[in-house]
Image (cartoon, rainbow, N blue to C red; front, side, top):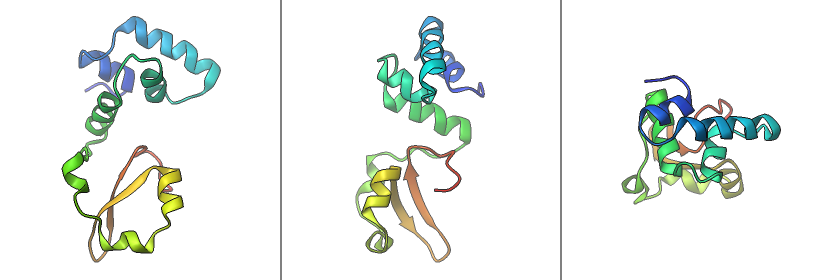
Length: 109
């Protein structure tokens, strides 16, 4: 698996090399994340980017089946914080909270 999101999407048949080049040119001006730009430009779907990131990081991709019940810890969390950071708790154990998040590279979250 390629280690860059654009290369991974090309390898997966979701993106054309010319589209990646265009997005990279836009990224130089905007400093926006490449995955976000690829979606905004209409080159790929959000799900394609999420799938590629999950595969690169070796993380599971949380689908709708994971959102059927809210864990009890949700009552102890700030909804404003969760919305602002695009984080959703999925499950709670004695020592950890499993979350779905749009940016798995955000170490703070």
